[in-house]
Image (tube, rainbow, N blue to C red; front, side, top):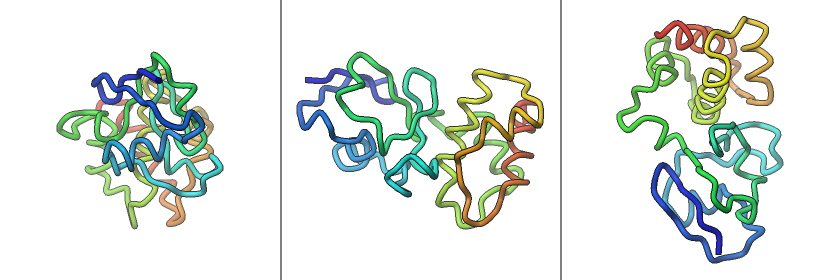
Length: 150
């Protein structure tokens, strides 16, 4: 049995310990904001926070989450008003939007660790989150805006 918190709610998981967190969130809890991309932690679409740190849910096994706190895009802010979410909307970041929940979760984790990152730190902190539409300039601008309080 794995006891964990997801978006502030206590949960108990009693299934296959090797099951990826991604499938637990999507299939068992119905939290579909976390997206499947590559299944190998290469694209960042499935980024969530575990104890405040950005992790790839597609390769994070349920057995590693005992006593941990998981935050998904649905739990980032109850009304979608986290500074990163606000900046994303105000700057019209998404094109197709598929990668955006992972991008937002990565950016929120970065800003929690470095509230005023340099441009180089933003580039480094967002590396590994791929956008097939090439919205990197808008993503970068939104992270800067969120750091300034949007």
